[in-house]
View 1: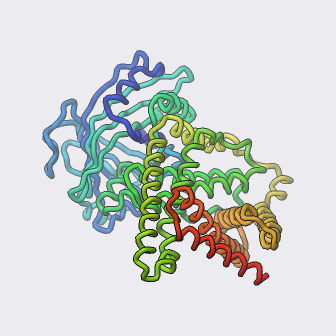
View 2 (view 1 turned 60 degrees about the vertical axis):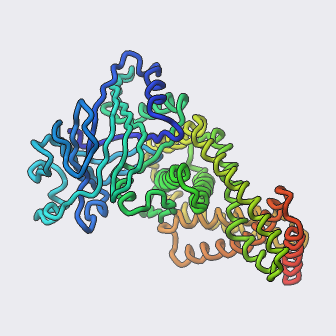
View 3 (view 1 turned 90 degrees about the horizontal axis):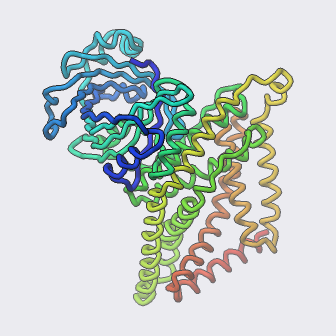
Length: 508
């Protein structure tokens, strides 16, 4: 029983189990390690109101067998070693998680309240009322192949390859992933091994646990977009600690949307992935004076470019063009047909770009880039130090000073962008800076005067929205031009853009 589980989880996009197992067996780090194979069946429990999920805890029964069992049914597998596991809420960043874990052998496939006596369960359920309400929620079942590694620095790591499925509400979700669990040593050792793996097979660091995915499957939201959560920074937090917390949440949002993009076509997944990356870039600049350097993101450049192009196509198809096409056609069947054909060409381009994104997620370079971000972020912990009194006073108002400085710069750029001779790149620069101000203030919101912070967010959002509509129209015109199928619609939109620009200049 290990009271703290430190684990790095890697999804394996575009891979098959046999190929991954062969690649792992050839890794120098696993030379001399004999793999062990087991079949695991897990059943997770919660109350009808999902009290455990709300506490970010999990309770499961696991049956471990050295032989595969027949097709799983509602009944428990008849033979094997039974383990009851209780996990509590933890912290996670870029696939690396730390959480409390208590495992106890039990005699049969039934929950045992007594086995929870030495765990935090009693604080959660002192009177046993929750335990009495527990019922099965979902199952996971897999073939697990494990390697036990003893490294030169004294670290001990268990590498587990899980091949199986999650079952909930009559639905199945395939599972193919690697878990690196630290049994002794420092978490840096996990990243070193993960990078060796990622150099040979595409990986995607992901914080979502099997329990979380099981709950999502039961509710039919396995591929729901991951949206930005409010970052609640504690009062008096040092800038570097704030950076680690905030950027950890941003990286989690990014990787979760990338994971869902592997299977789903929802344009909002692309949007939220782009939002997460914009927030990360804004945070890099916001916290730059206190960071030791920036993470290398060169390996992510192809993916980021493809996501940008795909987002532009989605915006053109679903947001910008439909309204203008209605004005353009106005019941004219010829124009309606021409516009429909133009949209069809953009849809084809969108599908091609979506497959490009998925292909890039299935390339080792992308996984290495994402692991690099997570490794860099984790390394900030090693640099946390108590500042001396003089520096502490200097940093007391760091959040307010950084926000005010950004806002002043936005006003300067807006003055340039509003000039009569302002170019489209100037407008775009103002829009990007407005986003940066908004994301930065939202990140630091709890550290700023509430009224000022709210006003700053509203002001930057207005700038972003106003310039964004103009930029989106110009980008849609460019995309139609590239397909070579805009025809009269393209001329119409050019006229709209020119008229809007003339109107803006006349109003100044």
